[in-house]
Structures are given as structure tokens and as C-alpha cells.
Image (cartoon, rainbow, N blue to C red; front, side, top):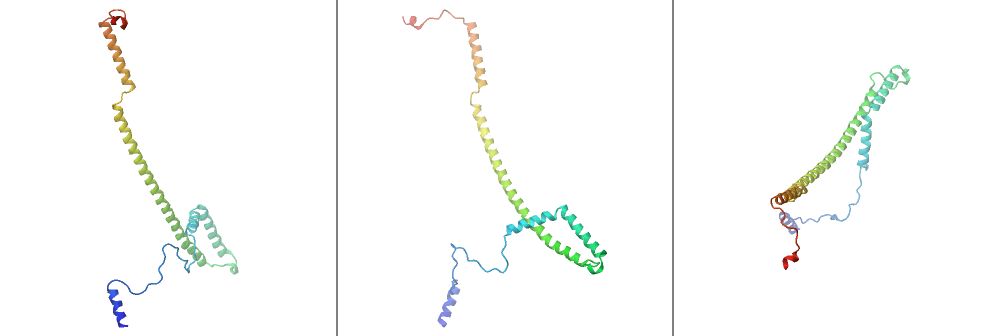
Amino acid sequence: MADRTEERDRTRAAGASAMPRGPRARLDQPRAPRLRLLPAYDPEAFGRFSEKIARFLGTGRFIVWMTLVIILWVVWNIFAPPPVRFDEYPFIFLTLALSLQASYAAPLILLAQNRQDDRDRVNLEQDRKSNERSIADTEYLTREIAALRMGLGEVATRDWIRSELQDLIKEMEDRRVVFPPEAPYRSDESDRR
């Protein structure tokens, strides 16, 4: 027994554990579902639900309905006969109900804002990538246009050819005036004889 203890101490000192491990999890297979204490929920569905509530809480319709409920509550508990009043003058139950509504509304609004921030972040990232592509395309087209302009500097354009032809015609007319034609045209056959 003492030999095993010494051997275990030596292997631990060397950095290796001689203690057998539990069964190794296989990475090529999904984990078995575990027992959960909390109920499972779809975070995306809960997020959409919170956004709907947050949108409703931010409308004038909600403020009007909330105001009407509070006014009816106060009027009922002041002017109704005493046996049917359910919340006397300091309106503690109303305060509790409004506090409960606020305690749920604030986190739901924050959750909706976080989801909106995430969407905005994704949209900004997509816009940034789109802008980078547009800038790269614009730079590429600019380089291509510059290359075409440089290439066109060496190419004869229609206007340049036209002006050169007009210069040649003018030069030929000037020569005709200076050097009139000698004789009528002869064929090459007479020159060969």
C-alpha cells in the first residue's frame, strides 16, 4: 500500500495524474439532455413577445388606458359604498399594482432595447461591409478609367484623323497650285516600250 502511495505521489509530481478519470465525453456525438430545474423557453419567441409589450407600453393608447384605469380605481374607491371598496384612501393596492407593472415593464423594455441594439449592430456591420465594397469598386473603376485615358492618349481619335486628312488635302491643293499637272495621264504600257 505504501508503494502505491509513493508511486501516486511521484506521478503527480511529474504532472500526470494516476487517478482514473470518469467516462470521456465523445466529441462526435451530441450530449444527452440533462435534467433542468428551470423550464425551457425559446429566447427568440420571448424576445419578440417583450418587443411587442415594449412597443405597446410606448404608445399613447397605453397611457390613455392606464390613466382611465387609475381614474376609475380612485373614483371607485372614494365614492363607492364602503363594503364594496377594495382599496381605501392611501391606495396601497394601486401602488403595489403600479410597482409590479413597472418592475416587469422596465426589464422588458431593456430586453427590447438590447435586441434593437443587436439588430442595429448587425445592420451597421452590413452597411460598413457594403461601403467597403463600394469604395473598393470605385477605386477599381477609377484605376480602370485612368488606364483607359492613358491608353487613349496613344490612340488616334476620329477628330485627330479628320484634322490630319484635312491638312493633307490642303497640302495637296497647295502643291497643285505650285506644280500644275504636266500632261494627260499615260498608261504604264507606253513607258515599257
